[in-house]
Each structure stands twice: as structure tokens, then as C-alpha cells.
Image (cartoon, rainbow, N blue to C red; front, side, top):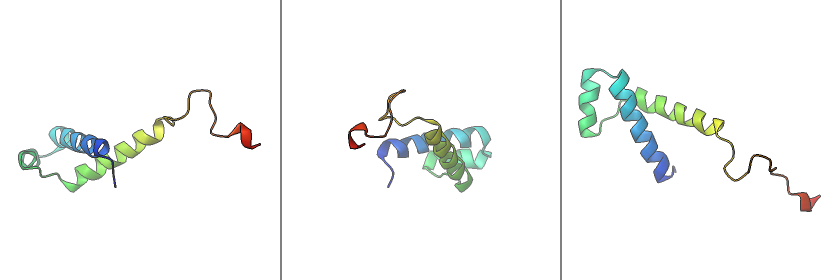
Length: 71
């Protein structure tokens, strides 16, 4: 299950995509919380690409995930 921050980010991104690329009826549907499937899929792909581009938050720029004490 997705984290609440991810869900909120997904909703924001879907709404922006529909406002920019959607038809007038799709934009009207946003008032009622209706999201077209194509926009949700596009937003998920964009978020997935965004996650892949971000470095691991737990590691610093010069840190390694290898544990030197276990060698």
C-alpha cells in the first residue's frame, strides 16, 4: 500500500495532467473527484521515474550501502 504522501502527490499530479491535457468533460469531472484512467497511469509512470532518479535518501553522497564491519 502506498504512503499517504505518495497518494497525495499522485492526486496532485493527476489533477495537473488532466487540467493540462484532458478534455473539457474530464476537467469538469475533477470537481467530483473523477480521474480518467489514462491520467492515473501516466502519473504513476512519472512518479516511478521520479523515484528511480532520486538517490537513496539513507545514503550520503559518498557513503556505501556495504557494511565495512562485516568484512
